[in-house]
Length: 375
Image 1 (spheres, rainbow, N blue to C red):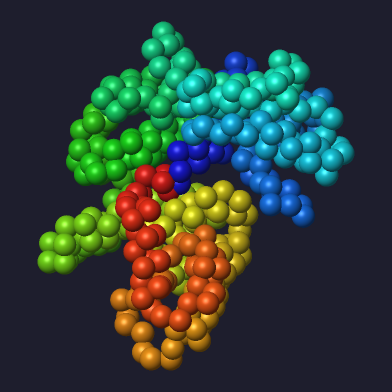
Image 2: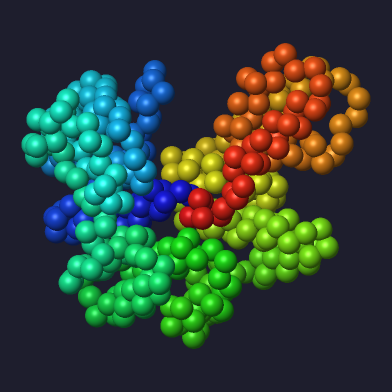
């Protein structure tokens, strides 16, 4: 899950965090639900929408955009999506767009076109770097601050939030939810730490007895990581680390899916165990829209069909000779976007050397498919 998706996880778990972030009381979140919305007959997808309760027509709908990189055309895209959404949903009469920037310097300099909207109550901008160094904050805003806190200060803030959870009786989050969110953020910020190091960082001596620990560090994961590291020592350090990170990513995705869809059938868990880190990253984004097991089954089926189609097309173009298993494995490990791109660029290829060069270029362009991206 990319950094912005970490915020979607926070908002889905506790909508009150969003309302506290924009300066409203936590009670204002009552009845709101958060989702990602795809606009019909377009390639547009709104990052997030807070829907008001059906019985509260006087409450506004909130469009949410989380921005962690510079995009000079952001406002042009955002408001195009907003107004297209309003055209497709005439029942919506009250709305507000909220843009959450990692830091103020990321805001586009081109503001003249939409200056009237930006200066009105229809658009609110939140700068997360302004949270760092703040004197006080609610527990929910503190969790957001932990995401952007400098690494050398994150451990102290995480422990402070755990202590605050014990003294803030009106928090919309349960102690278990708070611990789970803090651990997820800490693992995202420090992906190379062991479970013992995470426990020590959080000041938790009985981590083994918590539900979070039992889910995240189940015995199968420990064995998988140990085996991956042992094999990695034989085949190369980088390969072993990548295998270990795939295991970590798989467990994180399984945990999110269990929370969203319930317990998963054995066959689905087995299919997901075959996914690469890049594919787990894409699944981490896609699951935000899943409403039931059929959505996960469809996603896996589409990936399998696309893999087969790509390999079939490449076989017809590059010759029927047997393909090395390693080459097939490399193609099968590609993400949806990479497979679609490969189908386009491979038109006209006549030699497998062209495929090998393309695969090497993909690896060079993305030297580390970090598990950070799926948290």
